Length: 299
Image 1 (cartoon, helix red, strand yellow):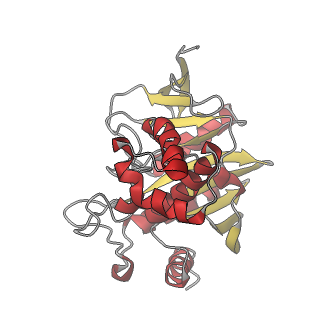
Image 2: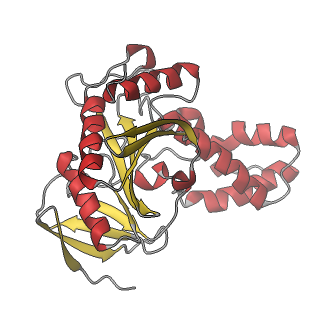
């Protein structure tokens, strides 16, 4: 494994590129700020991302959110993640295409986490519109949907993802909110308790793009789960899975561990749905449509 650190300039600042010591996908990379500072997303973030693509156009690059609960990794040192990999979000279908504005195409993705895709060859206009969406989301509130931008702390940020695709810059802006409540003490837009037996950790950049980073305990637990489904063999480690496994037993479709992997994938989809701020129902889609139109000054 080559962990050599390579200097690069992003946004007229010194950063350092290295391959990750824990590779979750092809050419998993980390880009670290030379300055030891907390993660903080800003307008400058988009310049960093697009500067990186100028240097390594075959890679994607993205950032975890910069606030607790919705950020997947450490918040006390500014960094990005990148790599040569195609994630499911890249191939997501489109719910609505809002057309072109100042050479930028705007789309709402059919994706569990609320995501707006901006696409353009004009880097300046792309960045300008991305900043408008970022600023608008930071102050957006919709009490009916439990979306509150700020109380005694800031609750809203984004998970930005950038790539070059067929000669166009693409920016995916994933909208995030880290509020908690009595009903959802771990996070309103976080995996809810009924799916935490599979995934209770924060949903960061990698998960937001559709790759499940799951706890290592599941490997053995799923093997034991198959024995429980097939012959009723109990094990203490399965206690948290029992309601889920009992439902699977009723279906009588689980024959192999691979069948259980498929079911885990379905739970992970629910994990992502829990984390979406605008749900993919009529109320949620009407609200995000209004939000996008307001940013585009079309409402």
